[in-house]
Structures are given as structure tokens and as C-alpha cells.
Length: 196
Image 1 (cartoon, one colour):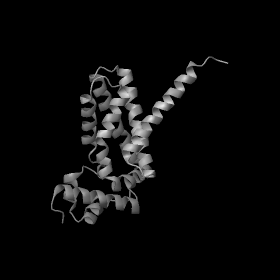
Image 2 (cartoon, helix red, strand yellow):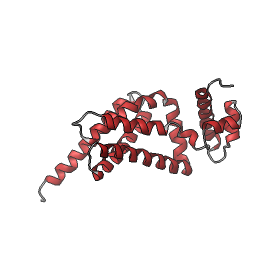
Image 3 (cartoon, one colour):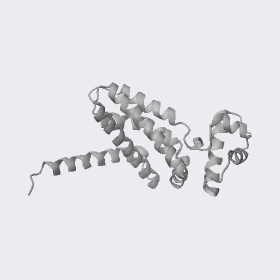
Image 4 (cartoon, one colour):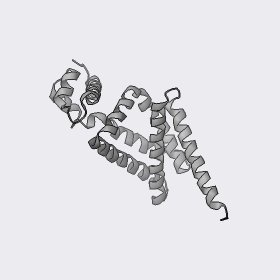
């Protein structure tokens, strides 16, 4: 039996991932997850309110850390540069949990209820980052756009990292933001050309 709360939580997450992969999310019960993890169902509910949250543990900490890093970024940076700095500050969380990241994304992609939860969690993080940008004096419209665009770019980097583990998440993150800048520059230069 796990001796610490963190160990029990990790075992429950691993058990859930295995069972979701084997049976599917909908066919797996919290009792089965607890049994596979070697704990009772009461222990499951001490750590997670429901079987969806097993895959989203740590979201509140991630949201808080991103917002704080945006708030504390040095003056003079553009919104996307601030967000890149924030994403780089939290990438260690993902790097440390790489073995969990890939199967987690697969389970979410295959399960409508989990995709819905993922969208809600993402919206909460985007709102927190936009609010932190607003507190820095970024206009509301631009803060929302930057937060949404930054989050999408961050997710692209994560997917690239999962697909190609030969490079670090940081390398993929820097590349994704470079691609975003190139895409934006291309769009702006095309707009500036006179019509033929």
C-alpha cells in the first residue's frame, strides 16, 4: 500500500491510465482504479472528486503558476514574449511527467466527456493568463487574443514534443513560437502588398 499521498495519487493516475487504455474511460469505475492502484475507493475520493479529474490533477497549480509568471515578467516585453516566458517556466512539470503525457492525451482524444473537460480547463487557464496580461496594462481584446494564441501554440509544441522526443519540450516550444512569429509576419506582409 502507498505510504504517502503523492505516491497514492501517482499510483491512482497510473492505474486509471492503464484501465482507460484497456477498457475505455466509460467502462472503468473508480473502484477498479482503486483496486489496481492497491488502495480502497475511499482513498481514490480523497485525491480526486471523480474519475475525470485523475487526468487533470495539477491544472489549478499550472494555472496559478502561469498567471504568476505573466504577472512577474520584466517590463518591456510584448504579450507573446511574456507568455513564452511563462510556458518555459512550467515546462519542467510536463518534462517530469512525460510518461503520463502521451497516454493521457490519447485517452482524452478518444473520450468526448474528457475532451469537454479539457476545453473547460483550457478556458480557465486562458482566462487566467488574459487577466494577468490585463493587470500588466495590455488592452482587453489583445490580452484575450494573446492568451488564446499563446495557449494554442503551447499545445502545438507539446504535441510536437510527444511526436518527436529527440528534442526537448523547450526546443519545440521555441520553434512553435518562432513559427507563430513567421506566420504572423507572412500574413502582415501579404496584407501590405498592393493588389495586382
